Amino acid sequence: MSLWLQILDTAGAVVLLIGAAVCLLGVIGMLRLPDVLSRSHAATKPQSLGMLLVLAGVALRLRSGMDLATLGLIGFFQMMTGPVAAHLVARSAYRTGHIDHGELLFDELDEQLTEES
Image 1 (cartoon, rainbow, N blue to C red):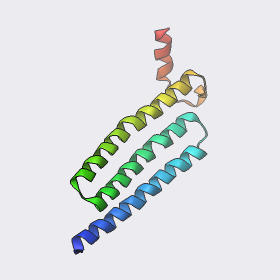
Image 2: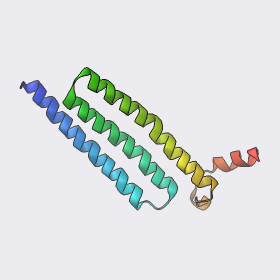
Image 3: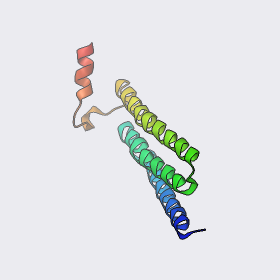
Image 4: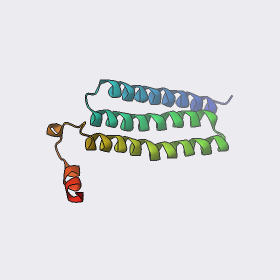
């Protein structure tokens, strides 16, 4: 095994561990944060970054063309679906009254909903 491949394997393992730690922080945030909006933020931001780091770590370890294409598709679909799902959860929580409006700094959605009615 050449020195270059050993460096790539070590870098892949380090990036994989960092990605797993970021995902763990996102899960802890989902369990510890008090309201729906904070939890949806914790479900989206660190999980997206953690997933990309995990995929990058796996890509550094695998290094074949088909595996890299598969990992790229996984990353693409995770980036397309994760934030959209969290947005829909937050919006439905807002519409059903599970949001404390006193803690919101800006409430632009209220103006849009009153215009629709």
